[in-house]
Image (cartoon, rainbow, N blue to C red; front, top):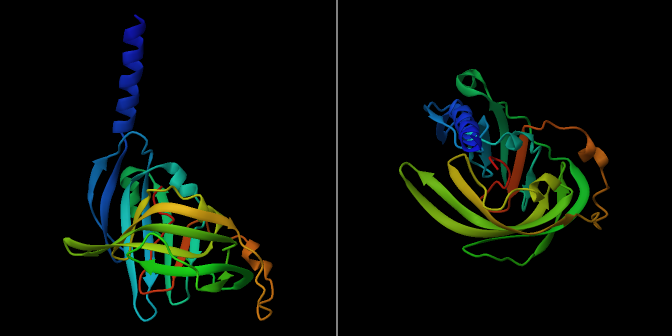
Length: 242
């Protein structure tokens, strides 16, 4: 009798999971259309992410729709900066089933206000380590210093080129809480965080040219994720789906 009861409960749980299906697609631009696919155990909501990358003179958009975990929608703002020439911003939206087809992701304006904090900065490709060559003055809500490694793939049609990277710079606290092994897509790139080696509260900048600014403490949209990198190369540790 007890065995039958347990089996019935498990069957009900499986049926409940099978009820959720999400549109599944990814492509450059702001719009993608895909087939509905059943979600796996642990994926309890549908998510859409619109990401923008700016390579100084070249900007690109990318969108991803898929099943995900609801906690990914509540991750808040995630920002990392390891330079000033390249930026990435991401806005996330969670919804349920077919209704997601009618939902539009809004990408807010990035916050570039200097906040008076500073962090060691470096960026190296084809390596799992880098040595800071300079101090970077942080912007927006970036009040932590971070050191990460990972892998990035540039998607070109059905082919992809892959490289590893290591980077140090400024980050939001929520960026430090990103799950290692997380993968995401934005603007024609797929990136994976392999390791968060360090993340700690940033010291106030000793550069007298930058006065400490508490404006980073003002509320900002929880849908915005911004990342800047110092090369013609970028990655999001945020994210996307965690």
